[in-house]
Length: 291
Image (cartoon, rainbow, N blue to C red):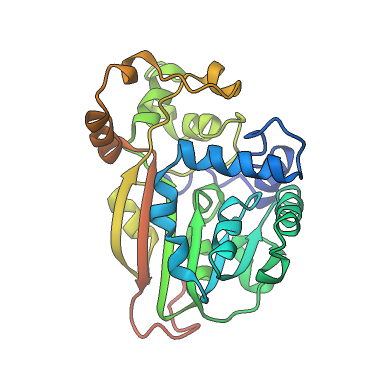
């Protein structure tokens, strides 16, 4: 991939420090962190702003199944999988995020359905015992690790013949990338990778953020057969009001009829969602090392 060398000087420790400083979605509620009211509001807000997630994850589909979640953050999707009846192994690089996720599991009395691990996806098998899972799920995570192909190589080790891999990475040909380029880069396209990383998250300065097209994501997924790939999600709200938990759309999105906005999301969405299965025989450890 053309962008593969952009973050070669960044380390996993850089990424860990960034997410420890502010776990993803930690400010989705002003209520006291760790309370049931806080977690309920975080969940409601996440799926209000990103309503495509439940349909992509298919939480109920995994009842009675084994789910490995790579990058669980503060545990919003984790809890939904466990609540639906899955047995979940949840991994995150950030100790701060895991502490909140564990507290969440306790609040909802789902401790017995979730095993938490702190670890680096690029060296996952050193932390999480290698065994096949029905679903390996990673939403918005792989693009933040310095060597994403190493991460994919590790994920293959947890895939059996019938396993499903669901992943979201950021879409390079998206409205958000255009917005970042024009607002922060003033059109300096030669700085695009740096600009995307710096402005990809609510907290500026993310050390690593890759972005992918439908073609380059297939290059990333060596050893997998991509069964479905689609884009979704344009953040339409004015940020000052959004921070106050008010949902007022930017003026040009307010002018768009809902069907037109949905067509725009399906073409220029920020989230590139991929469902894949292991190619070849699919036995544990049977895949070649990533190129």
